[in-house]
Image (cartoon, rainbow, N blue to C red; front, top):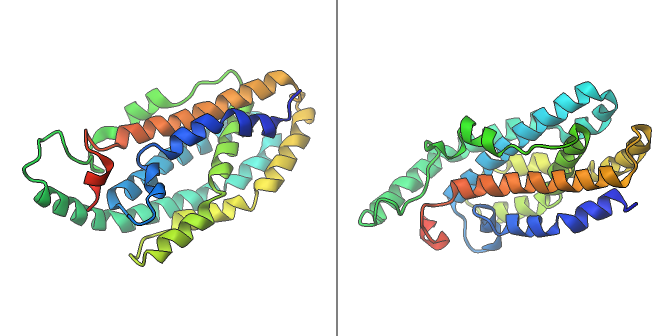
Length: 239
C-alpha cells in the first residue's frame, strides 16, 4: 500500500499546478502587480471553500467522533472571521477601483469587463452544483483538511509579499492560515494513527482520498473560472 501522503502529494500535483495558474490565484505569479478585484475574488472563493469544507468535516466528525482531533486543526471560526474582516476592508477600495476601471474602459464592449461582487458568479445554486461528491465521507473530510492545511503552508510568504507592497492590503486571512500551517505535522501524524483505528489503512482508502483531494482542487478551480473577467486578458483587469 502506498503511503497516503505520498500518494496525495504525487497524484494531486497536476491539479495543484492548474489551480495556481487559474484566475484569480495566478495573481500571485505577478510580483510587481496587485489587483484589488483579483484579491477580493480570492477571498470570496476561499470563503466558499472554507465554509463548504468546514461543514463537510463537521458532519463527518459527528458520524466519526475520532476525527474531531484533526477537525479542530482547521480553526475554522477564526479563519472565516478573518475572511469576513478582510473582505469588508477591501470591498470599499475595490468599488472605487471598479469605478476607475469603468471610467477608463468606457468604450470597451459590454462583455469586456470585470465581474464584481454583486454578480451571481458564486451564488448558492452555482456553488451547490460544484460541491464534490464522494464514495467515502471519511476520505472526503480528510482530503478537505489536507487541501485546507496544505494551502496554508505558503501563507506567511504571501503575507510578507502583500505587506511589502505598502498598499494597506488586509492580510488577516493569510495570518490566520499561517496559524493553521503549524498543525501540518500533527495532522499527518494523527491521520496515520487514525487510519488503522478506523480500519482504513488500505489501498482503497488511499485511492478514495486522492480522488477526493483532486475533487476539492477542482472545486477551487471551478470557482476561480466563475469569477474570471469576461473575455478580458488578465493585464486589462489591473487598475
